[in-house]
Image (cartoon, rainbow, N blue to C red):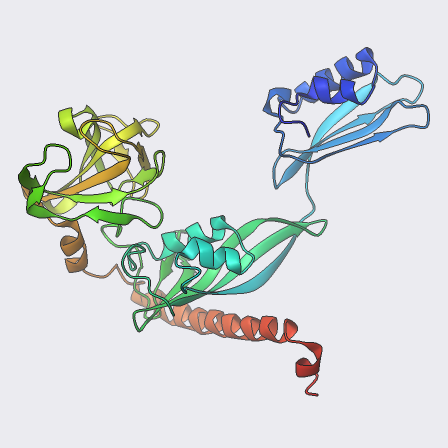
Length: 378
């Protein structure tokens, strides 16, 4: 589809008559806004023997497509439009990836498996309270995931729920098991003992793989002023526009200009904590003083506003009125809340089933990808 395509232009370029094009656009407007047409989406157009429009299909997203069909061969401008859900097939698959010299990030390791960045980000979010993806990853680390994967007409459609995952790093085998509270209906991830992986703080305010460029210091050479002064936070190198999220639930104290700190968001949390996010290029939608935010909510985008030599995030944490080193403070926090005792036995049964399914599916995937001679035992 041409990059600057519109539905009108697309249909006219197929040599359809003006009345048919106008009728197609009018019909589609009842179910879909033609202005939402995107050039990277596939489409299919079928004509009659005399060149009239018989059927037009356009993929809206991974879940739906627009269909425009002729109602009467003798009146080609009589058209109907509908948005149709794809008939999907969902399978539970296992994915195994490895961190090495050529694939030093989770994104690179995931892409090497043939999966997408969306699954990498979902995995990182699950372990965001357990693993610092800037400093914890080392060559030889690995991960395994049991996930629902959907397709339609043989084409990848999207990921469903991650049922379980393992991340082996620094000699630790960290596990994540999906569990839905049968009473409340809420879903979360827990370790193998039934303790929640959701911590009071996320390990980082950046959604994925931050890079520490300057640590917490009482006496650092300032890169702009070239004088020694305190740097009461952590600088994360990140591209302009990268998502910045709240490290914990809380209330926005302010979102505005802060002199050398540029655009800044300040959030008050429980237990005497406050977090600060400096040099943002923009604020998240609805982020303003007095607004409650959940952990992980988008609060802004990385920028270089204020006194900054380039795009980065200056993240600061205050405890009981005193700035503290976020990396040290995060390591002090206790593990998450456990599953209620009344549900623990059921969780443990499901845990064993999930881990067994992960192991079995990985073994089956490995056997399927072996050369025929090896698979047949010859």
